[in-house]
Image 1 (tube, rainbow, N blue to C red):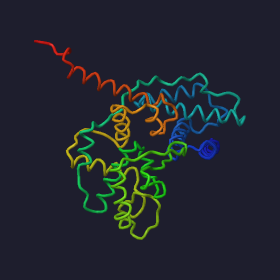
Image 2 (image 1 turned 90 degrees about the horizontal axis):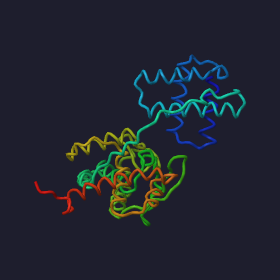
Image 3 (image 1 turned 180 degrees about the vertical axis):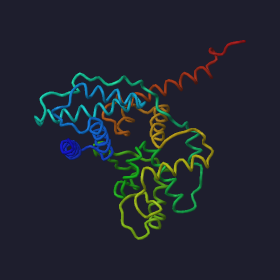
Image 4 (image 1 turned 90 degrees about the vertical axis):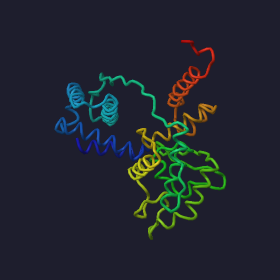
Length: 295
């Protein structure tokens, strides 16, 4: 079974051009399943084996979203084995994924964003930190897109960044002038002092002279949020959600937002309309004179 898993992982990575993160998730999911069934040969795995594994995941208090993802990983693996004629039937064929309730994404409001960015950098690391947060919020980047950004992807003259998202799909995202300004200063004045003799094309450099990691950025973000008095619990992805929500609230077209986010389907972007509608309802209840009731 190990050889089949490795062959499949190479297939999805090379042929399907999936990201490193997706590849790692698929591999982790399949190894967990293989360990549970003691690496039985693929052609002897049954429908009951899959059900037993799902029940095992539920007993371990895995979230529905996690179980659904693992089912997809296993199902697509067996689909591949069917194509390669290594098995005669897919044991996942009658397996349905748990229903996942849609949860509205967490966002920071505009006041909190301004608070997060309300610091004047005075050294190379602070310029880097401010540039990273500015860019992530201004362009709605995923954290993986931010840390993988290279110097040639940033166009300071025409105010845009070239981003490679899921499936290594390229998109161009415009930058605000204030974002361009802080990036210009960081790249052309401070970045070289962080390299410490190393050569890398990555835009954002860690304390060790190499490209900063996702975990490194998260630590920086949490530290700055704490220093600036933001008590709300949030992640780097919250900046991406905030970018989309604030654009929509200020009248941007949903399709434009979808393209800037790199969504393949505009339906994925439509969740932000719920956030915008919630704000409209709150504004109506707070400000419309006909909604004021006398006690």
